[in-house]
Length: 330
Image (cartoon, rainbow, N blue to C red):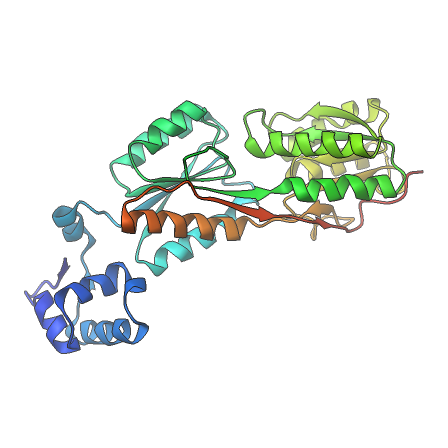
């Protein structure tokens, strides 16, 4: 599985490092299974002899490609790049590569990508999947699979609990004197959207606030701008958007209509990916996407190592980050 063009064998690397042949293989494929000093000794011996991992040979001899599939709904959404980067770094620690797929919020495209990846990867991470429960379970029966922000019993998953941050956001608006708020919703088949909408309804009811839901359909800047008239016609004094990208569009639309933020209208986003770069600074709900990406890959690698599927459910809490787009109701 480790090969040199001039015919030097894996045994020579093992002899030079004073380890077994299996340890040489593990140093290049699963270094976490060895002591750090052992890995360092093997890598130094391999470098001196001119060795490099031959992944093609490994795939032919073991059926293992050293690849993991990661599928996201919108690669342009700033929520996902930190998640992708963290996933890649975690995979690289075990000498795995990431195959990245972008579905453009289309479940048919997601299903197609899973099918295309299946013969080339050892496992999959589906992020904010738009597939039906049935399709996800069907794919999970074929190869190791981990979910991010999709809560399906029996399938390992990592969940960012934006509900905790949403409750803080509603409480924040209530303390500022707002009595009617709008939730600018995201995709109807999004687990995060359903979670946030339910949390807002519950919190609004507990603080005796009136709530209206305005659908933005897609989480995008243009969708946010397009729903501003509907937001204003609702007679609300504040809004919580599905994500920061949508909130940025709402912020632009309010500015175009000469509605001052936060003097006249308060606005809160979710995921906190743009809060620090908008003007005024966007009050938003914290983002833990990088941690979710790292955990999901770590969980998948554990599944690949012991070939067992466990009903693991990691939950990452969120909180409100207050900036300059919220103020007392006028």
